[in-house]
Image 1 (spheres, rainbow, N blue to C red):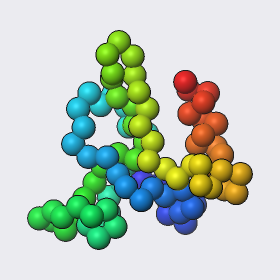
Image 2 (tube, helix red, strand yellow):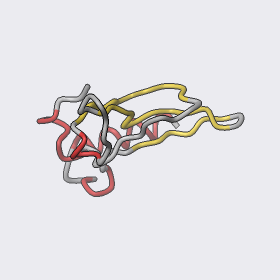
Image 3 (spheres, one colour):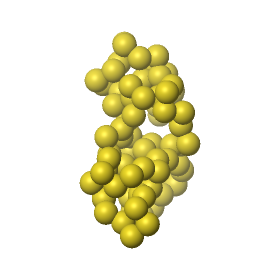
Image 4 (cartoon, rainbow, N blue to C red):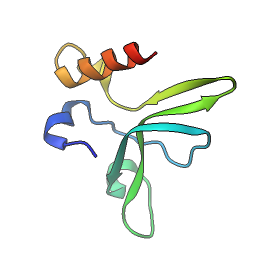
Length: 88
């Protein structure tokens, strides 16, 4: 779980749910349905914000953080993007 006050500028407006071939999760979200548009019985929804999935013989990274919108203005976005590049 991420600290909202630190990550708020890069916080995703959507999450990924119900995916197959999940390999590794770097960040998850638990939120109220009105913030994601998902209706659930419990009133909450959860999913991945940054994760790696198996894809054929390789892997694909799925990111929902707002990196491009805040790049150069937010050190969190800069660091996440740099880490993604270094891991690739």
